[in-house]
Length: 147
Image: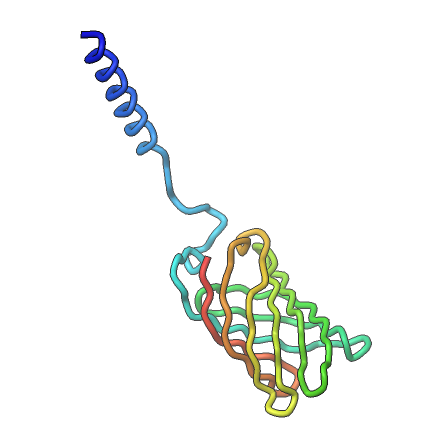
């Protein structure tokens, strides 16, 4: 008899816990827009325009993101040259946080690859990457990202 009372108590506790946990609101954070509320890889286009450079190493300008993330802001881009390879850290400052991207480019073809290194705010768990092209004083990054 004592065994069945303990079993009934354990089952009742589990059921109460289950119903209490299922009543919590699991809606996405209000700081994310509908376009940013994605779990699988989604297409993104990032375009930037260089507005100035102080030393031909650190560039600054404006950036526009469309697709998975719809936002505009500014960027800072320190660059390093290794032979005919250009390595850039593309730091985007957007209204809901920052995104840091590593870009590796061929200076002859002006093509390359990019990878998300990290983010803050709404972009804290952002992952992704893709291809890029550098026509003139701008960068065009295409690829996919996911949160």
